[in-house]
Image 1: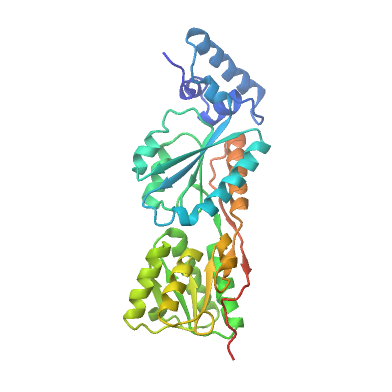
Image 2: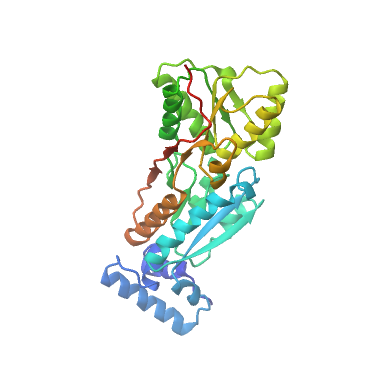
Length: 337
């Protein structure tokens, strides 16, 4: 009979994470518990060699990139995903862990979760960009630590590390106001982070005593081509535009700018635009895009630190960590008056 970490945990009356830490020779476990686990491990190994021990001993943590529909996790966004991975790997190496990256494309989340039911790993860090609340809840059945990045649900009892979308939206509205804009619109899409940015936008308008005009809230697809096509349709229908638009991310901003330009509307002379993400091409756009920069590498490092703390301390209290951003001022906002 093959030995599994769950068997050792059951016999030792400890968590799966505790067993993983001991087998990986990590600190933070009492000597009595450590010896107890090692004794059980040796006993089971003597009776039946475990072919998966090499997998346990490497101290691996998996990063799951789950692409449900590809509206955001596509080649337009590969740069920011790579930055997450850089931060995760850097912090993992510092603490002697290996990071394994696994991609899932168009697979049911329930099946993905099920596939990790008996896998000998320390924990999972999951890119939650395209996951909804129901997807997240499915991970509750796993007995290993799970940390989600690039999304946050305040009412769910999970660990999240994300950008501070609410504060970032406040900074963007404040910037428009400082440049004399009072008619400010929002270009949205349907992902959770974008919803949080819209919430921040609405809250910021209220804070600055500006009226919220629903006619200036526009919904487009989150891909470049989709945003371009949807904005072009809106313009062809003769929508009234505000003097400034906060786009939910840079890719959406690029698509909107292309559509506006086709209709003879120039940025920033006719309308000002601020994006979100500061992906590399934002500095080379025409015009260079003013945008909110949040360090994806720092989010990755923070998520890995949180994971390692959970493996060491076995805390059951979920953490919700948000990372602040910095507005990068370029040439896509015109000063009025």
